[in-house]
Image (tube, rainbow, N blue to C red; front, side, top):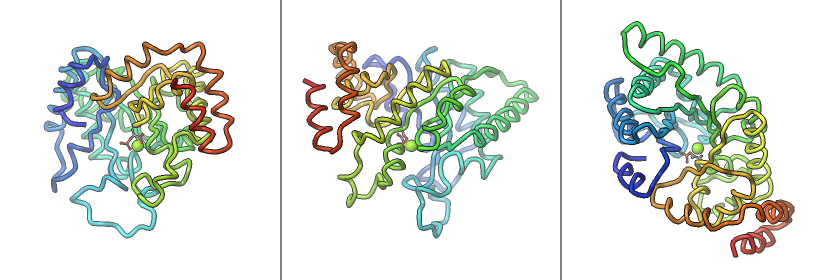
Length: 295
Ligand code: PEP
Ligand code: MG
């Protein structure tokens, strides 16, 4: 999330950055960061990782991450409103400023671009068009950038999860955002304490979607990573391995423990156990099966 995380991530042996949340550059201020300011921030992290992939997610504001400069809007369902890529597409000029900044950073290392909150192909077509415009603008200004910068989408809505194969065929990688995927699949507000007990990553509907996305990635021949909190939670490491996940993106403090657990897991035995968990009928049953997987 913050430049201060770079040192811990490197010390703990991160193989790159799976999710750089750019919104933290935009929040808690009343002005919009311009292209230069964004470029320096992105180039700094890209350079720090010296050729290892750094996935920069475009602005994901709205709902639980409001911008200070935006007047509070009257809306009954902010999580279903103007957020993620929808927000960026409403303001193409600002969006292109961000795209140009990321593109320029790609001249200094292995930057990748990731788009949040897609629900289908229509948004991908629109962002691809704006990206081409941003590239042309930079070329006209004689800036260097990676013309083939890899693109990916966060799969965090049930619609995107169901269309993961189609989306995967049009991008270079997919990343599962379980924080929102759980929220939208189970209709449980991720920030509402009253329903926190219903926010259940073990729910079979969530696990079936995760498995579907991982399979979709294999069929579309693109790597699938998981960048929600689940990836850094030791309780779920073996479960995710059993579902076929091979790339984990997490907060840097969890890296060592999760790596250790992965190295001490027998992947060949996990799939059958995970299938039993997928068939469970109650959260209690799922928890008991998870305990067995983790023994
Ligand atoms: C997610 O939704 O899982 C995710 C990684 O994004 P954020 O938590 O920033 O919404
Ligand atoms: Mg999200």
